Image (cartoon, rainbow, N blue to C red; front, side, top):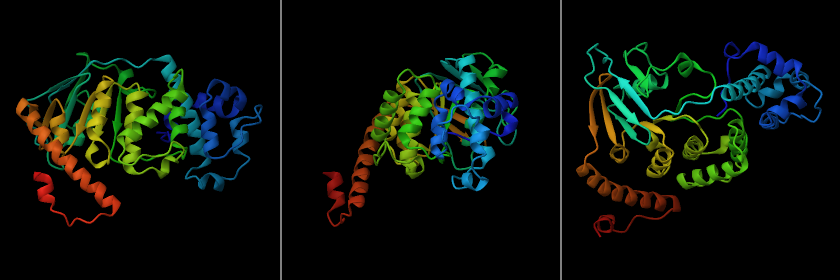
Length: 353
């Protein structure tokens, strides 16, 4: 996605160069994906000798307000994109094979008895009642905590302390997070957005990769979507499916954090298989018993601390098969609801039969 970046986080010298000093033609030659940003708000870039500021000055502030932007926020987005891609070019993202979470303490200050180690290609589920501290655990990992969060936990990467650059770099981050609410700032068509992302990652065939991402997202989504549909027109499930496919196939982040995927209206098993198949380290907060048993282990959170770490047993795997059958039956009923069917047949007999 394309979040607005505060100017305090943007290199001001770079901002001056991008917005004021460089002809827009030179800028687009070096960073062709930026053209999609201009197209999203219908700004012309056919006068290559002009600067970005000159192009922006052709339009009043109200023009950008129609797109939910300000002139300044649009300019910051351009600079932030150039900055992030430049950071990628200078510092390739590290390949992480193991993440270790060292114990801290719970909300009462009682020391945790359990830590956690996750290998690439594994799924760890975070379970516990609402408010127990599941999101706090994910946040500790997202910021690569070093005893500097309320829990006192620390994170190791491949058995080593993360460097300041790994923790605070503004470019490609080691940890990607898929939250319950997926909001897009720029209203591009879905495929154009993915092409833009693929280009920003330096993909050799961004168009082909975008087609693969869209096809994969439609395989995950309960309701397929057209590649030309605007991002803001996607349903919650479609948005989540698109971001999961994008994360698996394009994003270089080796650690993926997922918050309650069960509410996304997507094929949960396929989503996890996709991420694990691309050697991601996956942690997922969930209340769903099927997702919990699909994981390699589950971390039980109570009062803000890790109360237990349970490896998924063979007996639980056997129960997973039964739960999956129940889930498929309920999914067929949801399809009937969508079609407008009546439910006057004997559902109990259908299930038992």
